[in-house]
Length: 240
Image: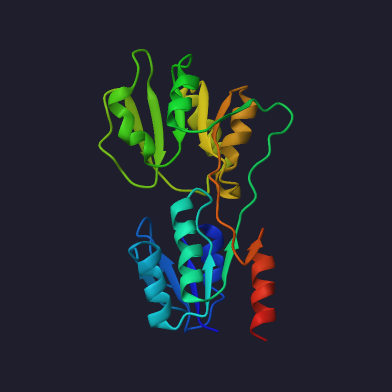
């Protein structure tokens, strides 16, 4: 069974290391490209659902695995539609979200407009949303100084600090970062990743509120899995 794995997450990379040589690991183009996989890596887009469907047919793909980020909703929707057009099953790894616990002050926001309103009373927010805040650097209110953590470097702004770094993030390093930045609020996606969870513990320890960007709606697929182990077990059943 020839597989196309849509990746870019830690879990996707773990799956890719188990795939046969005739499989294909696909990345959108952000971040590092692994060099030690048993299967080829494809970097770049497909041209929407229609382009992906054409690729699936031309390459003889028999199973599409979506292990993209929980917030990569457009890619997931394109994957589901493309698999339907190509007449093949689509499976998805759907990482469970984080859950607030005792001592947490989490406030969910739907989009950037709600986030701006919720940020009005803070002065030193720490953004861990990826690149989106870069589009709003010229909108930083008077009296606020932003810190943004991204995968790649950026020139920055007079009232913003840009940190280029990638997880996993150690707890002690996160404690030092929060102390040095004197943050008064954390802004995060609910990615559910263990690699980036320490920031939430530090926010709890420091009594900081966390503004959580609501997860997008994802499409219905043929099978969903909550863990890499579950997905790999299902693959073993399909390819004895």
